[in-house]
Amino acid sequence: MFTFIPSLFAVWQAEQKERGQALVEYLLILVLVAIVVIIALSLLGTTLSTVWYDLINCGFNQSC
Image 1 (spheres, rainbow, N blue to C red):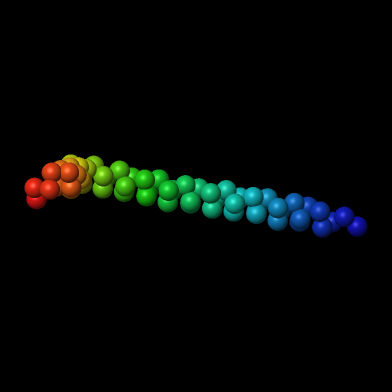
Image 2 (image 1 turned 180 degrees about the vertical axis):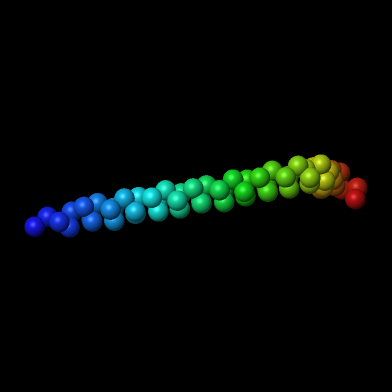
């Protein structure tokens, strides 16, 4: 009568494993994006700082 219960449990376990797999995939994507942002800011940081500094000085001094 209750022979379907083990099969339902197997389906539930498979769904739980897939949810964990999706979580790991999203985490890997997030880590990759964070690494790319850190590298981009490291490479462009001084340039962006100079640009912002020049914009602020030109805005206040009106000498540009």
